[in-house]
Length: 543
Ligand code: NAD
Image (tube, rainbow, N blue to C red; front, side):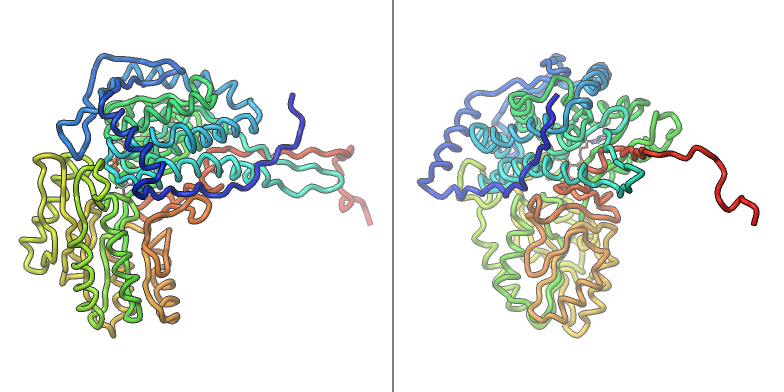
């Protein structure tokens, strides 16, 4: 039995490669993209460390090119769901009893593998299957996931280090046990890092997991499983099921051994999951721990003292990088009338230089939206804006799905601060601006705070410190991640723990000890050295 006192040093964030012309990383990535395009893969489910094929095959297509078939995956059904639960329950026994330092080394090794030989594999898979530029893939599938795998073992030691007070006669200690039962992880399409974090965070804390990645992000999920396997993740600790959530999830959610759900995705699906668990809560062995990070209607709020260049760059990057498909992407902007004419001119100028197209052409700033459903939904909002007399499309508003799901960066001006486009999550390259009377700064802050049900991210742009303080106070509940003079996207593990409240989720802050704590069920132990030998207290004695 290992008896050393093991320390994990506080990591540093993984440096981001620039992919400039002529750089080594650009050459390596291009080679890997070519290889992946020429060699479609067949992706099985992974249960108990075995590749499970069902024969129910689905094509994996690139969103930016309908003709590009990247492979096929085997769709799971109810049988596979049951097999995965059994595998998790069995693997959990030895895994949860293993020393925490051994569990940590699996993720630390996975981080090194991803930082090195798998970096361009996961970046290429992310670019091709969820349509990201090389830079957007690099900050997601390389850097953020490496950070999750390096920082979480460190955060685990912070959780375990939290010990109660002891005295000379009593020794008190806390054991952070894993949850009883298994954990179900369900991940969204838009971040490979989130896909890699959702199953591994509970696993690190000693849980075994059934993981259902998004059906539109199967390829990155496949490589994540390969990396974890090579890093030494024991069979059955993470079991991957591919296919539609409404088919795969119900038997798992209804299983009485369900210990927890680690979800990221839309507010609607999360509330469906919560309702399903809540509808018959008495059947479970323990109350399932439910953690969900969900939708957003993120904002940028400009004060009259905002620096115009900084503001324009923040709107352009924040709203349009990754086609506005980041949960943190600002999609409503409040600008005072005094600076609007200048901002408008510069913003439209900047947007006119943005190119939209295939991920393999590195000059493109934007690529395609994820699928037909997303395309139709976003187009619906654009057409709604076109018809509404209170709205004006200032640029973009065009789209084309003949080759891939392309939508041009679109700016809408809304005269109504509570219109549909100012309040609903669109999750696409559409940003809506409300121009407010400069003198109504405080009233407009209140409108911003009360317009949408979400509270994920937001930003204030101002040079005047009074304005910053006022906004921070008025918008205290409006965002779990609040930025001052910076765009509200791009949270970094260890720097900006991420998550929001209201309809945006349970705010359990991915990328911090707060999230890891949720995958434990602490046991407090009191040990008394010299216990009493008589039940009587002194006050019972006669005077
Ligand atoms: P989604 O809700 O459509 O899907 C998320 C996952 O749930 C997928 O794996 C999907 O297959 C599964 N699913 C769908 N229906 C299900 C059901 N009935 N039961 C169980 N599982 C089901 O979300 P998406 O389109 O993949 O991602 C976009 C959404 O995710 C946006 O709303 C975005 O804001 C949100 N998001 C939030 C964060 C955050 O940290 N707050 C991060 C990323 C994405």
